[in-house]
Length: 356
Image (cartoon, rainbow, N blue to C red; front, side, top):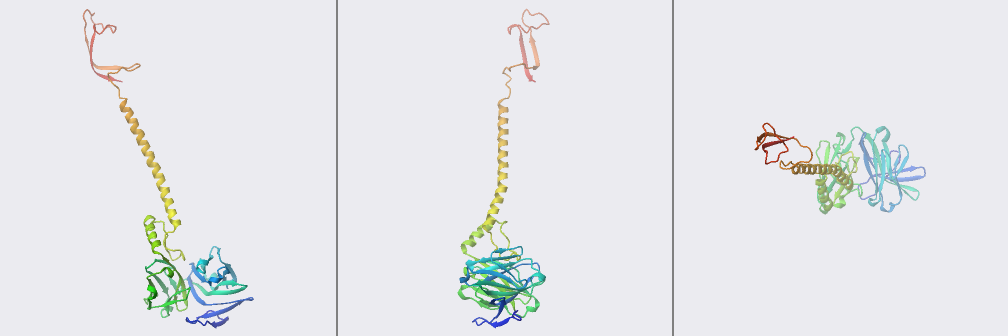
């Protein structure tokens, strides 16, 4: 099904299955495009890949909205719209956020301006619905070289008997349900559970499998980005998952193009978090050790300064004796004690001194 309506409808002569091409004129500029339909949940977001020929890497590229006749050129980021060029991949991506039916329903085109003329690489009709006709559980998946990935595609009851496919944007190669392609040591299998969902299983992943794909049921297509990691990258990320378990991002369906991996920025954030936590604890530990050493030193000094009862203290000292016995010397007057007498005249026996 095509959405060209009153536009000139052509049939594209290709070895692949024929598809509709719309020739549209805007003023004096004309362009042609392939077309498909896309439904997105209200308030949700979607990222759309726009591939172009490598020879157009340096040409101007933009996203055209027929609803408001606006053109948004690449490397533009707005609140609810981003158009980013990826010349190394020969594509630019369009991310639309906070989608609303009254504002965003309509036709859109990925366009490249070449010598004053416009060539459209893709065209689509976007509809925003509370329950999309076709959707995916996650629009961004990742796997490692030689590993497997699975993508779950959902559809409503009206598409139960429609053809289900998994296709690659770049070369439009498609895999149909209940068919397996095992060429070049990789396989793709699609199984429909008959309960409004079908699952795509890709095994034996290769690095060249990275890129954009779409789930399709009938005339509806939903973009999905696949990222395949090399063995070395996968092992390094596995190590990071152990070292930085809580900071790595979790993949969610609302994040359209983010890979489920721990990025260098995430690792640095984790390191800073460790530093902010460890440094205060280290300083506290050092302070405790210093205080402990001071206390130990102080206690040692007190032990060394304990008084010696045999020593004579400087300055006044009051000494109290528990027992004092006077022994009368020869020729001593009764009931009198002279403190000026010599030790030969008065003998004093004392014991158990008390210091105050």
